Image 1 (cartoon, protein in one colour):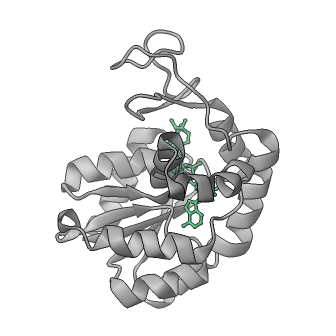
Image 2: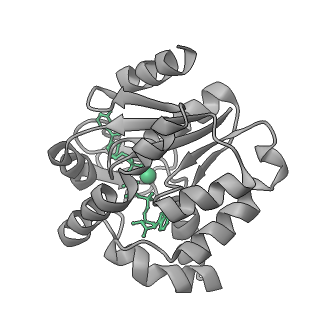
Length: 209
Ligand code: AP5
Ligand code: MG
């Protein structure tokens, strides 16, 4: 099963991709996670993408497409994958068609107001990457990862100005992909505004219908 997850910032792509990956036993591939990991390790790619990602701008298509083409060629993708954050515009969607087909495109639907609430409360563990939300999905001990017990951090692009810019780019460049995948007959819309487990049930139900 080759799945693309669409949805605004904070719609729960990363949260649901993690659960789907465990359920379907296929890898969760997040362009954002790949870029943040490279920034953290100070690689050449990290230095190249940092200024874009921190400001909430899209990394140039050539770079993103090259990285994803190489990633999807890896052995662990042979039975399928869950793409989180790619493709993000028409150019990337057309490029993806050249190196892989898509069986289902799942769009997690939430309002911009909810997106902002989700992003503002998001924290993650700098060690294992586990995601939390200070209100909706809080850690057991305040601000500490349940597993690693290190202090949770906020993403550099989760600042108000960058959030506004990212949502603008989503509506202008990414949302039109819903029509692109609808025309191909693979689009599934799921209400992303419910609780985490209900959204997951909604996805599983949509996938089996
Ligand atoms: P990326 O990392 O993909 O960020 P994003 O698209 O902005 O999406 P988010 O990760 O913010 O949201 P999410 O939908 O994953 O939500 P989450 O599960 O965390 O991209 C970052 C940057 O990298 C881009 O801005 C760009 O610069 C670059 N980039 C990436 N891909 C690119 C591409 N293809 N081309 C060019 N550049 C690219 O959930 C959010 C919060 O809400 C969490 O705290 C979570 O715990 C909570 N939550 C989740 N679900 C629920 C729920 N149902 N109820 C209550 N709380 C919930
Ligand atoms: Mg994410």
